[in-house]
Length: 310
Ligand SMILES: [Zn+2]
Image (cartoon, rainbow, N blue to C red; front, side, top):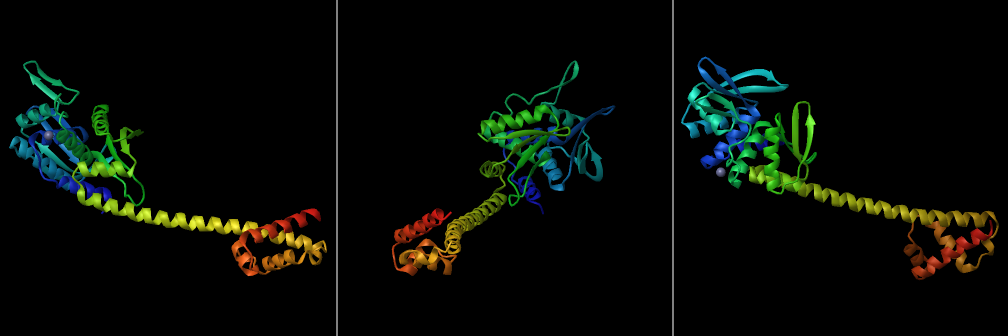
C-alpha cells in the first residue's frame, strides 16, 4: 500500500469528534467530491470517491449528523479524468437540503433555492473545525508522497472557493504552502518534512507520522555517511594533487640532470616522495624522521629547484 493510501486510511478511521467538526469535514467533502441533482422528487446529493473507507467515512458522518441513511454504490466510471469507484447517495430531499445548507452550498427560502458560494461564517472559527476541514479535503482529493522519495503533501481542488479555505487554514496554522495548476485542478502543496509531519499530526495520522519520522532519521544517517565519504574523497584528491605536483617537479629535476647534484637533505626528501607517491606530507615527514614543517620546507625547495631549471 502506498504511503498516501495508508495516511488516508488512518485519517478515515480516526474517531468521530464533535458535531461542529463533523460538519466542517463534510463541508470539505461536499466541495471535493460532492454533486447535486435537482429533479422532480427534489434535491439529491451524491459523493463520488475512489475508496471504500472514504465512502464509509462520509456515510458515517451523514448518519451521525442527520440520523439519515445514505446508500453506498460500487461502480467503475470516470469523471473529470479521475477514477471513482464508490458513490454515496442521499435520496431523501430533506436531508440533502439540510446537508447542502449546512455546507454553505445551497440556501432555501420562500423564493426558492439560492446557490451560496462560501462556507457558513462560523464554520472555520475554531481550530478543531479547521483541522476537520483539512481532514475532509485530504481524504477527498489530497495525497502525500512517499517520504523515501520526496516530501510533498497536496490538496487538489476544482474551485477557487475550496483552495482559498485550505490556504486560509494553513496560513492561520503557520504552515507555508505553494500553489500550482494541473489541468482543471488548483494544487495547494507543502514540500517540507517538518510541516508535513505537523499536518499528519493534526489530521490524526499518528502511526504514519512515526513511519515518516523513521524514514527521515534513516535518511539523515545516510546523508551523514555520504558527507563523510565526500569529505574523505576530497582530502584524498587534495593529497594526490600536492603529491602529483611534487612528483612532476622531481621528474623535471631528473630530466635536467640536476637531481644528483641536489643537497642531500633535499634528495632524500625527493626519494621518499618518489617511493611513496600516495603518502601524505605527515607520512613523508615520518619516513624522514623530521617535522611536518621540515618536510614541507623540503618539498617547497624541490619546487623552487624545478622552477629554476625551466
Ligand atoms: Zn469543531
